[in-house]
Image 1 (cartoon, rainbow, N blue to C red):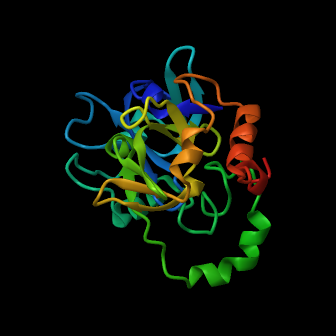
Image 2 (cartoon, rainbow, N blue to C red):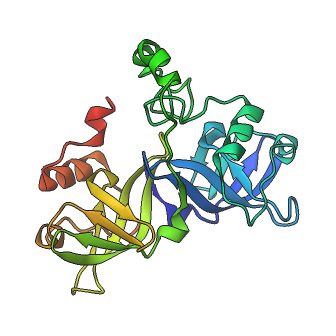
Length: 258
């Protein structure tokens, strides 16, 4: 199931023993384009600090009651490493954070979640064998220097095709199993009569964060004629297969064995 980030923003976050807050933001890395933390608006409960929740503790998304359930107690969250609202999420904080919860660090291996492609190790041991074979080499490698970005902050970034701009980012489609960003929702109506279309992070050539611009290796005309995306429209595998066939790209589900 894919969810729009804008739709999930404002969902209630609940833990084992009560309310945690509401979803305020999603922070993702610019290597795998995967959500690493859900940021909660906790009101007066933990005022002055960011409340960050990893998908590793996520139980389920319940759209019927606009709620995301976490396998964490309020006391656990209260005693977790602190990060003020003004501070960026740096690697030292992440080391402390993952160490506190006893979680595998997502940057500890070559796959989306370190040793595998899912936030929960129990969800899929998909790449466990390959990781074991490469572990000694990985332990000696230079740590990946990916930065974290908020979906709200990246909304509005312009999309640069091979032959000019094509629109801007308005939303993100998140995979509830892996918490990967599967697609950027791009609005082209500022430049053409236009429509909303989907661009996969895999088709991004590079991002200039200073210019707030995303470069894709596709021509404008190809994107102009791409299948239209309507807000709230279910994006099932049939739609995705047709989209990838149009762009002549292999689906991510093939590589991930889904």
